[in-house]
Image (cartoon, rainbow, N blue to C red; front, top):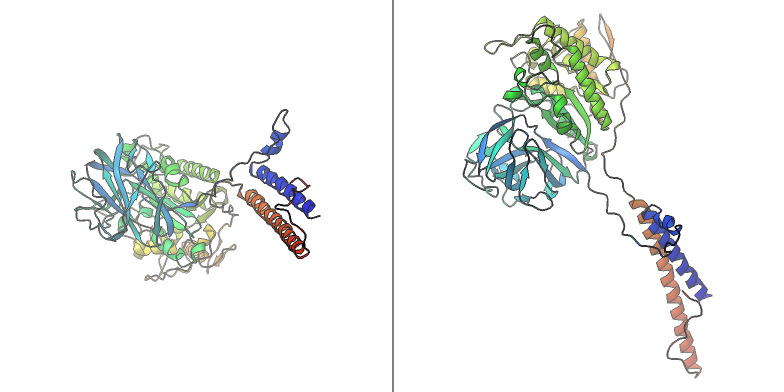
Length: 567
């Protein structure tokens, strides 16, 4: 009886093992067995590799221009990251060079202060499966190998890049008063391992070549891309824009309920493509138009689940300087471009939230930029479309209403509120940027509503002002879960449209057949244990039998006879 049990167990293990192979290989074993002349012996295959790590973007700097030539020199960019992780990838851009650029050595370290880094934190960065150097083709990017490197949320990383030979320097040009890049003089050679930073005698407000940092092993739930112009870039506020306090708000949430907010703003950027770059700032650091750089600077970044779009005011201004009747910079052309952005993002399973264009007026001397009635008409048409349910956005963030001059007794929705005005009648001040961040509902990103940051400015919506009603309603959306909010004043009742949001897609990762493989291995292991127990029981029975025979004086054989049952 014991032998029969062992044989049955053995046959069952063989059958389950074959089933496991079939499960792992998607049924290929069964299919091949049915072919004429096919071998009936199971072909064991290796189990699939473990699911690859999930990467998400932790920091970005879109390249918008070039600045000189580096010859046998080293640059060190400083990048503050808000995402913790256990591995890092860095992306280098050669976007604004007409020739290849070769980086002979790249390192990553934790910034100490200025160009100096924490002693002992310098780690080599490799490319193309272990090479210490990389050559980046003209107009292209290069992403490093995954580098084991523990990152703590809130610390600044220093990426050092040695140019081997000569290279045109692609940069992200922003912002006055904000130093985030250091460099050696030409001819200084490889200084990537110089931890005190003594060789980096040049300090600049523009990053060089470094366009993105990605991390894996993070508890965060994905990335939100802020896609915009100088208002998003932080041009007038030393790099401080609404993205910074928004990330601070999200930082109050538990880590698994946080997302990283990356800044893809470019000063002077337009949404649409003009007939010639000379008509915009593209030839002087305005970057490529939003529709042109969308895939590179937003859709292709790892871990992106949502995008906040704030572009179009520069299109209106540049278009207003062209002859009357030009299609460039019109409300229709901007709306068409926004529709294209929405369609491309949705095709990539990315949500798009539209931000209404901020109010602006003519700038004061000495740098006067006239804002005409025609310009204002285009802006109002674009904002009306953004606010309408027909726009196609997954949600609307009405920051135009939030920062307009409709507080403390004022009622001019076409201008910035005084304390929110940086002075040029276009860019918000630091207080204005904070007000914008506090007005963005974090529930749009699939998160709980994050606490707001206290403001130093008193802004009370003006009673009886229609623009103030919109402002009050927009502010209320970020204070509680939105559900068809209505704000009533003494003269008007306004209800913003509430549209169904697209569901957030999980962070994209490769599919895996690990589940059936694990089941098959577990079944084999259990049945192997059963076989071992049966064999052990038979051995114990034989031992007891021999002992009984010795006690009875009967001879024992040197070895037991072979079993009659074949296993």
